[in-house]
Length: 201
Image (cartoon, rainbow, N blue to C red):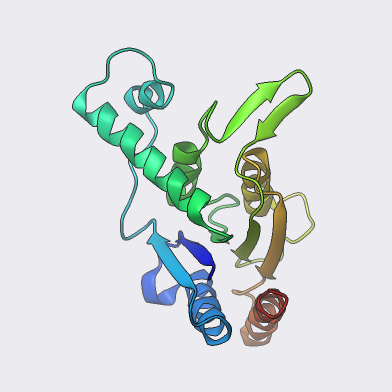
């Protein structure tokens, strides 16, 4: 039995294409692996505290912590434990104004912990969350893939790789707001990658 962690980050609810693709993933994964455990963390429905001076001090373990800081530090470790327990991590990365949703950025901020999920050495940073397969589901309204504006995917891949999650497959649904044919083609391409990822496991 494997554990699968699914990270939803869209704020669009029922209108979210990335969430629909993740739902499709969960259904098809369960069909192939009915005994597996899928944990879904919806960052929009259950938002995390946004990084500020108090919280960054708590995550760095600096000084005596107040109650808000203690809660943030405990939540951070819980989020990291969810990743540690997972064999597979699936992350929705919709593009908003050329970047990632603030909800996803906050998750990244909470799981990037020096000495816990990464450390620095003489040869550079070392990620500690290794040995997992990652599926990134990216959705964009325009056509950005492999261009200078493909910033959301670049951000997500950089952070995930930094903490050791380097075995990344990307399901890219682009140009979703550029007409019905373009949307159908984008969703179909991403769905095919998702299906191939599941078939290979």
